[in-house]
Length: 253
Image (cartoon, rainbow, N blue to C red; front, side, top):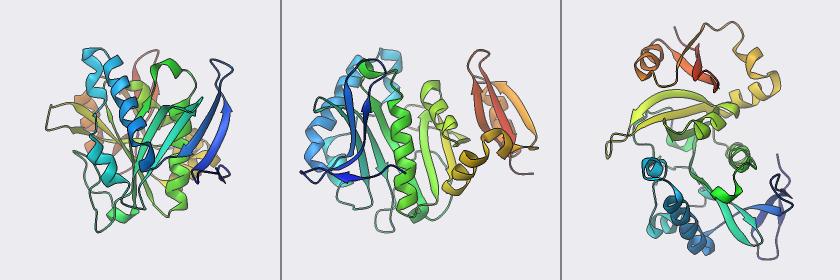
């Protein structure tokens, strides 16, 4: 896990480093309600920068969402800063019995809500892409979830956004199921894995972890075949971009 230090303003600095695409220093920290104005500005800037066909990648959340989010001490947000400007962020939702909403629009229950940790609203300013900032935030999310005793890591990604769902695959989550957003019929991948299994994959490597499990490949846009395989106990475990193939392994019989 990353060593945590405290800033003078009581925000928690998680990590510092240098961007690959420039000599700029970046800082990753937990952010709270005092950053809401910057959070809203970043998500609007990114939404506005997207071509019309990709705007479904982002659900622009209102100020009230963040105000309510920070009322729970279980919920967190991660922010990445360059020159004191917020350039990337992610929301960590950790439901409780009193606040059981998971934010997932079409996914079966995995376990008790208090065992779940969900990451959503993962945004990176387009000017700073190419620096693995999403990977940084997913790594930190898993550390936070583990530290806070959560057992399951869950995310939801538009199927048309292979960059994002492939980051989760590389971080050892699986494509668990396919969902549909009832508001606009957008197809979604539900990503899931237990924290324990993620750590085991990190130690063994995904190839050794999946070992002798039966495996099948299918085209990333063949959702009918993917759905059929999922009903047979298969889950997506890796993605080959050159030939647009998803490798699926069988977990249940």
